[in-house]
Image (tube, rainbow, N blue to C red; front, side):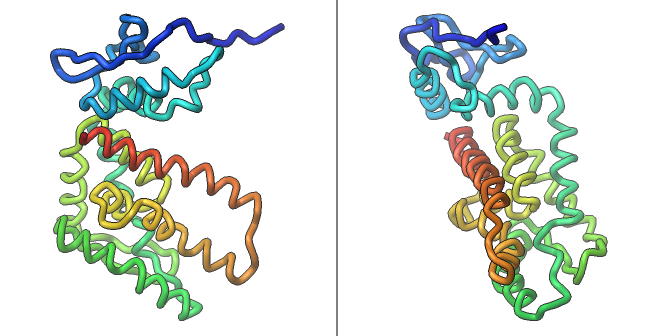
Length: 236
């Protein structure tokens, strides 16, 4: 039995203004989310990027080639209806942030972690008022509650679209600090991605590159870079 696939039915995708922002029309008909909600977008830049995705579709619609549309769907169908829960889930990454766990040995790895991760922790302390403490090994160490509260407040100020992007920046990197730093353009997103892979790069230097692991990583890296782009689109 042939699997049904959605096919292109429109000739042109166009950006349209709404009372609260922007949307995309297909031959004059507004795009809606999978839950049939209005595709109410915060910026023209995001609407233009989405329209370009719809225009790029050929005979069959390929959702995997439409990351802006998929992220907007997530913001409207998921985050908008559980904003507080998403904030709490992401804020919890601060309790066990990747950057706070340092190698007990070898000393060369610990030194590399300090050299590359400490500046990001310093940024969080100086800019967000959230100083996190370090620990050696894998045993968790309690973080200052005032720092956790400030990180939570930073996330809580984000719009649904920003939070959809931050979800991926934080969850994929494994670090609340790196996710927020990427959103603040503390460093280029590809550099921040490499910071999240510091331990993996060390292991590769010792034992060689695992091709399968690198293939999986490439998918995650693309998703991380898209999340950064979507955050910029959300902010216009």
